[in-house]
Length: 466
Image 1: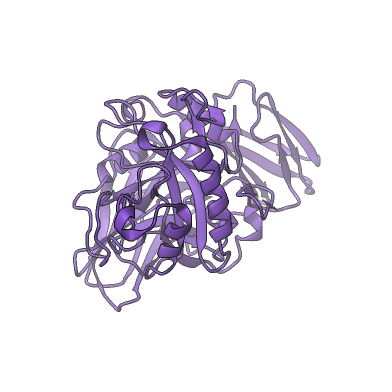
Image 2: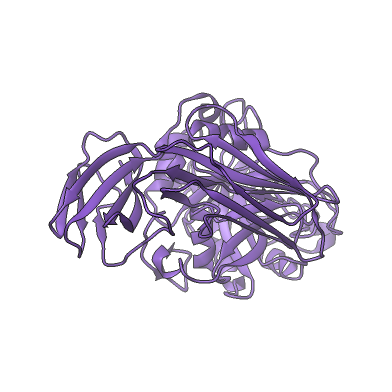
């Protein structure tokens, strides 16, 4: 997890979150969609009859939809889809005016890119009113049309930003699906929708569900080592916000604020659900929630509670699991039938190995729910318990180039650094309050630093090596 500083501006979506402030709070469930379009690009196609041709009326429409707590409008970023830079700036202002913290969240982003045999669309949030584009005179931030490497680096360099892959068909994002794992891309991308659409639906009775899914792409990225979650998109192009079907992106957060939504998305505390009010409690060892990357000395105990607001019992609950970075697809390791509860101990995980686990639930009416994973490393020298983000510890700079500095109030403690696969890169016993670690030889990517006192975890943090 990134340890970030609270910086919330009322007049912008420049949001940074301190994880430690929220870790011990009660988490709630909020249902919505972050992929939709208005007439400012190629949405509101029914504006002649609906009378809705801008973000303001689109947000107002969404606020009246059932089981719907937030809407993100992600307009296409180029003129071939109707976008002009002045519209983008205006839409951002309309989202700010419509936003109601703790009531209904109105968010503003973009769908960047084009589809082809190698490219794809990326939903991007966190750049405020700045449009990323490639057309002369039609961008605030330039990024060449096929330069996805540049896009992901821009996201990584903006602590407020995140992105996820829109409707990733098998041929989209070929450089991700066929090339080796890229830690810089992993740091930028938070997930993929397990379902998307129906994009051109005009249905407003919550019944027009997409027939396919993107589970294969989700599994493929996980098998390559990517830390990504599973969400849900509507991709509305008509005035149907929240009503074309009951599918929802569900975030798990302390309260319904823009800062908490960004925190949940950036940390993969979300899942995708065909059901509009199903609450899924998925944990490992009673404390680790979906999206967490955890290390402990014991076999992981996986628990799932399916709580459907309409009283429906799950037809099946499945645990999918795989080893990170092996290019082997996950498989179902355990399942139950006709129950809302699951408890399972994975006694097959070897020491010093990392597995990821995610849950698929099929309800009695056939609707599906897919969660983001939990990544779990079994280390016999680690402690049992929750992630610790002790504010008295400072780890800087983050991102880092040549040297990582640690300031810790303890004496005689142990430091350990792992890569994203759980492999130990550095370990040392330290007896000073300040300590520096040479990182110039580390490959660029994501790492985790852990501080132990008397073999008990005192601090754990994610950092990025540039």
